Length: 551
View 1 (spheres, rainbow, N blue to C red):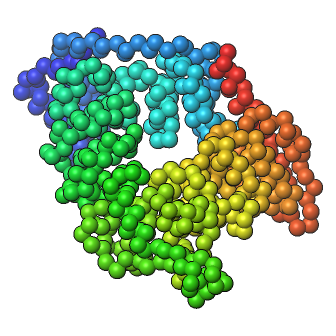
View 2 (tube, rainbow, N blue to C red):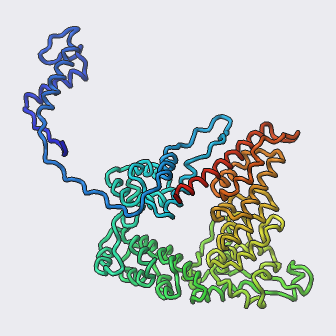
View 3 (cartoon, rainbow, N blue to C red):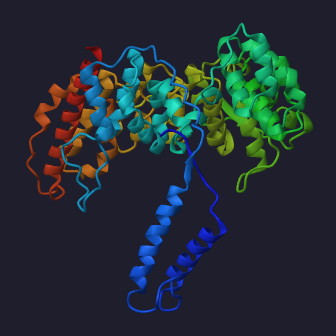
């Protein structure tokens, strides 16, 4: 019978009898004789019999309560169903669980199916398929354990996943991860509903509403935010302001300029960062003047400044001596982190916020490549170039990124300004996917794979053919050199997920166990053979997965 049940209130005598039985069971029949039972060896059996009778009596006293309201059915999913072969593949991917590594750490030759699930979900979403209802619990369980799966998994699961999430607390993350908690956001024409949700909605609903409007009508989103800006809490203002990153444009400048006077330091800093990303903004112009006053060309004293021969241009740096109120208003943080000099801290912030396009005019019309190649006096080069790196990433300036990266074949491949692999990866992200792949391929061809893992992570999937060939060639060289294969396990795992599946046939010659030289690591040959067999098997599996989604 549907619905819950209510217990009929027991009479005082029945309640007392049950309590006596419970007390006797807790204390033991040797210390407390059950009611109506003689003491002795039969007392425990008598207690159990009495408890059984009393339990039946208590259950018989239950009366059916009114039935609960029938659940509303899940919303219909209009997307086409998965092809049968793809549905079977999804079930296999979800059933796979990462194996517990043995003492040797060997993975064997079987593909890691769970690592292919994100790629499968992305492909299924690109085709616009709906998830089979029977796999939704397993899909939600997988997304619960892996936050990286959630966006693609919830997009694929569709409205039925939200319906299930309202019934199972373990899946509530799906409601938190969905704009508006799974509720439909108002359309552009529903002005009254938009105003009501903005004025009365929960914070998460308001953030989702603002982001949705910003995506379709940037000016309307900013105007909506301005209506309540003065009354919002500081932490809410910060979150709302961050939503303006999407579609940032010159029309946002007046609002952001007013936000520079906000009472919250974090809000002021975010407003300044957004304004510095607008190269024609008044703040960018102010920062250009400040930064330009700190960095200048010096021809006359180049030799004395450490820049080489006399007459060669040298950049000389005079860092700020104070952080005045105007600088603080424009987002410069006055207090330097522990271990950092104040003047270098202020200089870095000014250079980072100055428009990169302003430097050519201030430095004799030089191109970014020529500016970056200039010697810098008094050991300021690292600080100056690091600030230019941050500016190139913030302003998405590909010309400056190329200059700072330098040629991938240069010594250490760090370029004149990239001081770390993390900065190189960020600079690469400002380039288009083909140029990014070509640069990383050149880096690997010159320097191998030991430092390439972080750079490979910013390359588009599947890897472009030149990049894929560079990775495979470097792995083959490492194998022939007798290197430890587990040192390259991270790159091999990336290759399994990112190499173009069409590369599988080209790898067949690497599947055999190579001869081990005298300097090779013991057993390395069999490890490499396993790794390449797994790579080829995974590539062919990915090709089959793609074909199943097409048919």
